[in-house]
Image 1 (cartoon, rainbow, N blue to C red):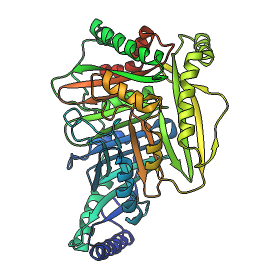
Image 2 (image 1 turned 90 degrees about the vertical axis):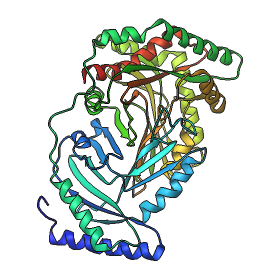
Image 3 (image 1 turned 30 degrees about the vertical axis):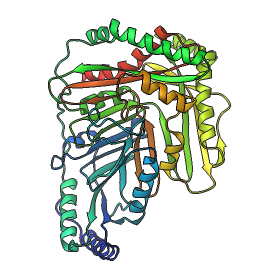
Image 4 (image 1 turned 45 degrees about the horizontal axis):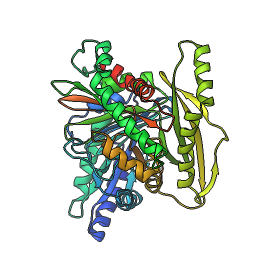
Length: 474
């Protein structure tokens, strides 16, 4: 593969391109062609900066503890939508394309789409340039690592007027480039040296930020006492200023090392801003006819030693406030999937431990009695009370009114789907945007009747520390 395609691969590619040409002409519209092969590669993250011929899209997804990662770049086809019907529109556009795509190569698997959605139905394009309220991309190239093996893939649309020989030659050239692509060993610096993490944390605790937070929480508590809400999730931002755009990859490298149990991601739609993070919260995974969900709500810190850590975990499990907040999320998920099939879940939540926090967690599994679309599942689930509130419509209106920033893709679904309909989306938490002017960090907390504004402020600081530490140490 290093110098040329094998005769069998070349013949297979030419046949698929000929079939794509005939179908495209018959249907009067382009057809997706994918060529996949095995190659040796270790860490996939450096490949995100190794292919520089197309800066129109970059994406990365990794769950280190599962040995699963993908890196992608370029655009074979981009799908965008907005408004309340954006989930249905994405399903209507993407699923037929994936179903009819033609595949070739020794690791034939069909194309993937990667991307995400905004928290609200629409998005401020000035604050989130290029992201759109919904955007999923079939990348021009990608690499996928699963259980130690790496599959590389080239995707290309075959137009009705395009000669199949030209299409095959172009795909073959991209395959050779991807097969011979060396891993970059040197990392670009993420940011100019920052004075110190302590100085940033001091800024984080500034008086103005505290006053605004207290005002937001007080307003929310007044709504809860009046009976209009039982929970609302409020967030705040923290900006680290920079004089030029730097690579996001060292930040992500630091995050995945510190948080291997989290979903590490970044998306760069090609308009000058990157969104990245390491989130502990899976929204939905669809695999082999089963849907895997999880309720993650209720938080405490880690202890300074094993005994203190266990005591904090037991206190979290015994807390009426935290258990109540967690149950709201569990009930909302169960309601959203009611009637879809057999549901399994443990009777009590467990505690999952991250490097700096502990959370209440309830895994939920659905064995569906009928075919499901992952986009329809996202529509049912988003936003869960873990990131929105309850009742949902009222909570979302209060978030719009109380928060003084554009959420964009923060606290919204980000992930992938493949040609078999399988996929995984996480809730984009513990995240930041990066552009030429600043890094903007996001973090939030659930406000319920028993909430104390100062305790919630300190909890948000704990949630901000992972990204802040990654920036300072990248």
